[in-house]
Image 1 (cartoon, rainbow, N blue to C red):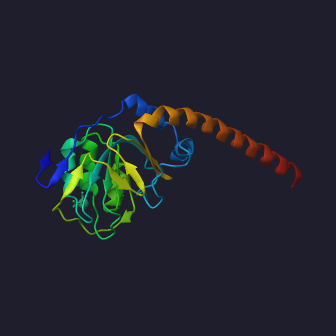
Image 2: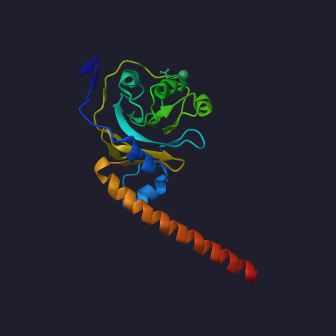
Image 3: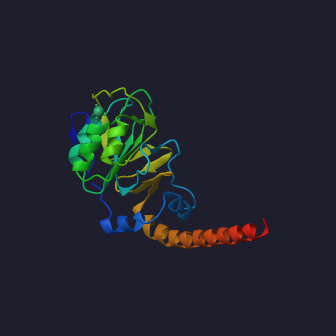
Length: 214
Ligand SMILES: O=C([O-])CC(=O)C(=O)O
Ligand SMILES: [Mg+2]
């Protein structure tokens, strides 16, 4: 299917909401460790407001640098729980989304957006509480000419994102988990949580030891 010069692929599936729910309890750092410290988007893509976090299924979008026609075309393809994953080529000259689009994402039930590129209206997006992750901010608005793709694999921050992949994002950054590795990741992350708790207990012991001698 093509919307004008934006190609749309919809022959893919989203994971069940209850699978996503199991990921919600975990930090991106621990999930990364659970996947051999791989699958993590480069650290240049970060939350645009403090406390932003989201778990959802990837709705991948490819734009031209500085142009958001494909993002606007994607609005009608958003399903509840989606995270729009937008390859905007890391371009710093134009904002690919702002508060208007972010609000529309939320209206359609999206869990958030991850942009390999720049965005604007950050203060309002933060007030609205829409989780948005991006490389940075610029007030310059985007062009709207296309072309682009929706629902086809994209690359963001060095990681391939297939439609329907599980995306988790928090204050540390973003991880992409293929659904066929969900069970393995959840099993491994439980072990990591237990190990982290043991490390915290060690620190507590150390604190008491140091306090006793200094
Ligand atoms: O103008 C645009 O397309 C991006 C923008 O600022 C918004 O979504 O609020
Ligand atoms: Mg705006």
